[in-house]
Length: 253
Image (cartoon, rainbow, N blue to C red):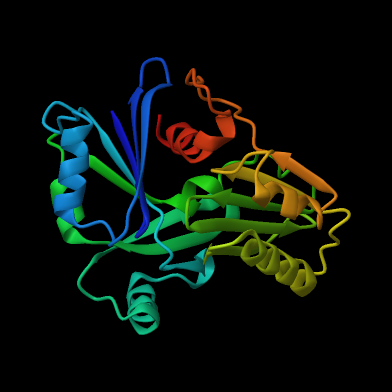
């Protein structure tokens, strides 16, 4: 099966074996001008991925534009109206992810051209990046935790205090100090002490990077995400680099 994660700035592909629940191969691309259908087609050809023989496709939408709606307030009609008012996007197809663990519905949109390209005769499933992440409890046993996932240009942040979800947001960054600014603002807004709050890192960040060194100056408890359920891919890179694909696989396999 094919696992595909995308945003305006990156695309992540993985082939997985449903029988063994193992990731078989991974590919990551940075994008300069968004994900046009022809760009995705070229990447699939370069990776020698044949959609006609792929038995199952799961697309993880990691774009910033999404809404979180409490389940008791959710209706499709109101969600469509609010999404259109906030993002001005009426042409793309809307999806509504029920995240029962948080009593939330995530509303998000995927371009029809991307859906059509990834259409499989066996069926294509679509979810939002945060839908799977909010079901991943790694690191959230501690009541105060900020989870930060890095791609080349974005960070995906989830903040919890006293076991309550406080924030789910995507931010763009260019320097480590951009990330520090966002995280300090979150700590101040929600009363999360830097000395007590766990900072759980995943994605494209390493313990010998300028980003890690900058974060370590401001937070006392910096940890890296560790996989819990998926069979691990043998790689020279640390497992937390691939956390979003492990999370997606754990959600759908």
